[in-house]
Length: 209
Image (tube, rainbow, N blue to C red; front, side):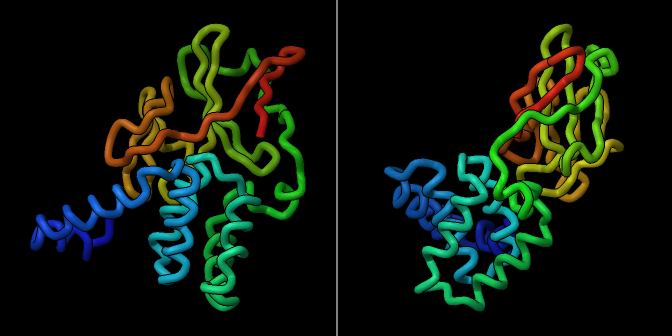
């Protein structure tokens, strides 16, 4: 939440409560993906960079693909205009979300080799750097494991290996804290880490994206 909204929540709590209640009620028949895409378009229309950086990862988390995000933006061309679309794409490119890279936009989901299975720490966190354009955190418990995208679901900040403390990760930008066993956000934020489907093939851990 911006400093201005935080101020208004304190200065005019009843009015702001009604405002947020209206927004929630207005979209209650929409699925989360559609609601997030509409919110993203409103942030682009008002050229609110902070909001764009917040709602783009949210739309992806709520099930929108990078291609669907681009479709939504381009379909809104009559109201946005070219200048606002270019402004938004410049920010999206700066965020460097792997799914929006040109080589990944045209690629079908595929399995990527991460690391030899016997090198994955049992009961701990393993970090794999630059695997086909992504960094991942792996939590293993016996024969089971979870593979998470290193990017925070809040504003796509890349969480570094140094962020590991016990079985938690803390995003350095806004201090969202994640439990790597479940992937859930346990402090500050509200959305979990993005998790990839994984498997072990010929002694090597692979993940699909």
